[in-house]
Image (cartoon, rainbow, N blue to C red; front, side, top):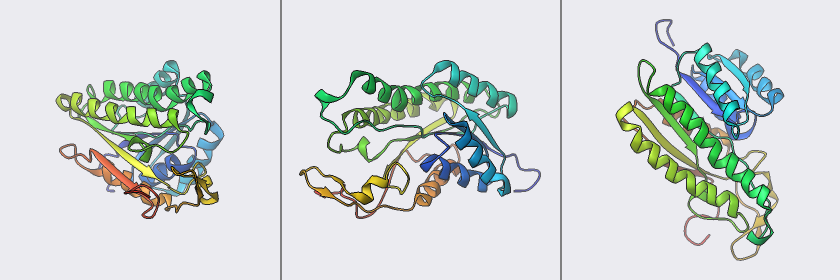
Length: 254
């Protein structure tokens, strides 16, 4: 990047580990200034330290995406530090207990919905308001869907329901953002090798009731895919992308 080029500003939620960490580092490597958001400040600081030798500036901000005031404070810091936002990667999310629906605690259900759906809504709402009024106008919102936005795993009603809802949110924001040069797309990820997916290597329950080990893919491929989506001009959009371990049981009957 030359001195005359303006660095793009990206926000990654859930940036302290896993997919969020990998994508934040890839964006930083490519010259983005990246706001690292998440609940664990120590984990965010560790990513920021790791990024010191990269091309962009990393700003760690502790944020609970389920809390409207916390999200508002996050965006206040973005405005104060950078004055704009070019890319939002809504990555923060959580799983639920692997139980039948009648055994899923109502408070846990609400926590899953708050994190996976309301959190995305709150961050998208704030980003939309900033992107439509900043100059130059517009920006890109990328939602982390999941293979579960297409098909459920056994005993995953909370996670699956929220990830299906993300697809609807992605479509609605993509439509409503047109007049403001705001684009919105979704990346559906299957079996990236992270802490959250480590159980796949130990064996997980399949639709037929069997326990099977599932292949994993390097999380760097997800980071490259998110970078590709982010780098497109606002005149083009990856509406939906599925990236997955090639041999995981998803396509067809397994």
